[in-house]
Length: 100
Image (cartoon, rainbow, N blue to C red; front, side):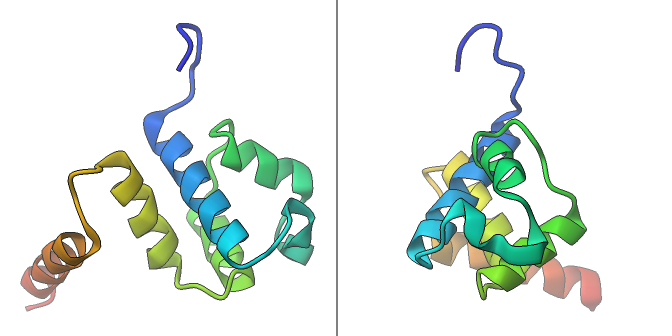
């Protein structure tokens, strides 16, 4: 990141996650239909804009993914030492503690 770069590391990681999922699904930035414009997708992917939870839901639907998958991939990108299995185990434990 450049010295004057005001982008948040979470926004950057989410943008990387969105781009990876978009490419995995074979979609272009224009391919999000009513969910979002190409310009906004580009801003998210560059970490310039941060989507709301509702927007994450809409993007995930367009990508045929659970919104949780997009968010989880974001956090995996922020923490390379974490792997999917460990992250899911941690989330499962926390959710079970909260629910029970």
